[in-house]
Length: 150
Image (cartoon, rainbow, N blue to C red):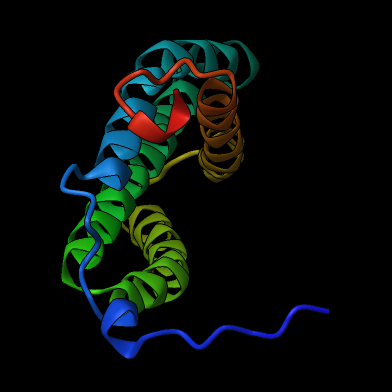
């Protein structure tokens, strides 16, 4: 078993040497993919639940896209400040963004008569679908604007 190496505290608290906002680029890439995914999900809910279901699905997808863009921006800013802040933003930012999704959906359902089932299912399904598509694209090297994927 190899001995553990001591980590220099200066490195741990230094900003990332990467100057490009890689996380923000990933968030924008996910938003671009939503342009293709959203019409399919909306059409599916139009067929299954009618116009109200389609509107609710559109709102659900919008919430998810905003979540990914916000997450990418938060991580990119944190990476420019320090590695420790980046780690905290990754963990707590994810939990806070899930809370924001829940809060946003709760406020929308309290203020309007919306198809809750369509919004809930479309939100979860589009979240999983978009993150899966992005992960596959990165693994296959489809993201040429991200240096570490080539």
